[in-house]
Amino acid sequence: MTGTIRVGVGGWTYEPWRGVFYPDSLTQKRELEFASRALTSIEINGTYYSGFKPGTWMKWRDETPDSFVFSIKASRFCTNRKVLSEGGESVGRFLDQGLTALGDKLGPINWQFMATKKFDPADFEAFLKLLPKEQDGVHLRHALEVRNASFDTQEFYDLAAEYGAAIVYAEDDEAPGWPRIDQPTAEFTYARLMSSREDEPTGLTPDELDRIAARAREWAGRGDVFAYFIAGAKVRNPAAAQALIARLGQ
Image (cartoon, rainbow, N blue to C red; front, side):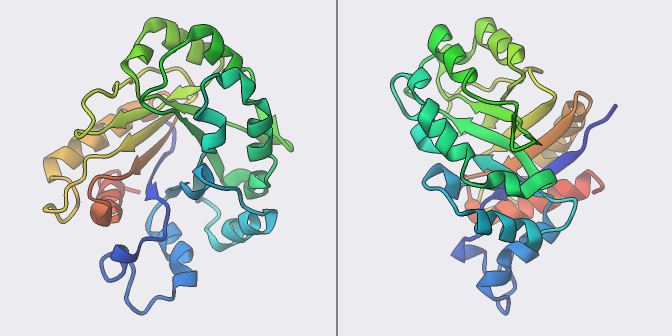
């Protein structure tokens, strides 16, 4: 079975996108409406810094097409701590803010860890036990974005697979020390592509985009795919996402 490939960017509010991605005449309050019809998914980044009220989640749900899906970056208060197993209260607060109001539009939750966080098998497993499989009757999918080479080990792959969590494939040419882990540990694949360049109109060359498209099709062979153009030359990321969507025939 081939999974669905969804492609997008991080967030939808970015002033340099006006006149490049958004028409100059578009009002700011319609940016999500526009972006959700040009792309097939968006990773919400603001949740890393603060929570939102249930009404906001419902507003985002109602402004987007039925087939659209949001991924969510988990709160830094859950992951930026010395002892991960002590973050239960923060995890509960993050999950209780109302994000399940998205319903079928709720995609994976990205739990991002700092590059200084090293793999501690016992503590990391205790953290994984804090992540529920569902919330308010809504199925939850968890992705782990690790940025320290100590995680590039079979023990971590096996632990992620045991709990059904995806390991984020993060590709960043500016961070050579980050591990690029491509392991089938979950029913879906989560990729963050951070190498776009401003001198390329579509962020990456045609050959580079073809390579990513081929890899996305391979990932789809093992389940749904969520691929986001993040950071890099942020002004080019919507164009990169649209170019990839076109290559995938979506």
